[in-house]
Image (cartoon, rainbow, N blue to C red; front, side, top):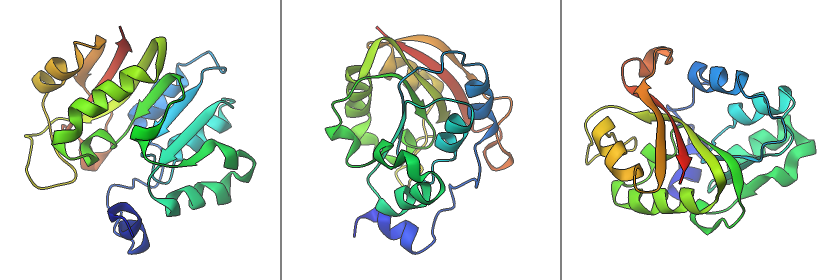
Length: 188
């Protein structure tokens, strides 16, 4: 059983907010093109997925390496079962217009960050966006979650992405207050 599946099986899901978080919800609320092809990697229980579907977005996909959270989403949205991908994100070849980041980046071992940037850039359509939240606390050797800083993110993403926004999240949920950066990066 892989690490993430085991965490779900044991109920060790402290990162799970139980609903869509405010910064992601407010970002989705301002999206007007319901035809965007959207990916949520490492989505866990996929509250962002549910919210997008409820707001009229139909071209939304989730990819997760753990099967349990995908089964949880499938129970809530069985008509979208084919949009739930049980696979390794790094094997994905499909292109997207928007990728929503919420706790996926921080869950990867820090040595995988260059791969993350490369993969994100490669699966976004021209002018595609990577948007969401990144943690803003010192990089730790113990995790997940692993931290990071605004400076690191600029240095890491700027070669492949135009930094449209990278600022402290003013509307984070209580446990993450003053620890998150909201960002919008557009692929170059």
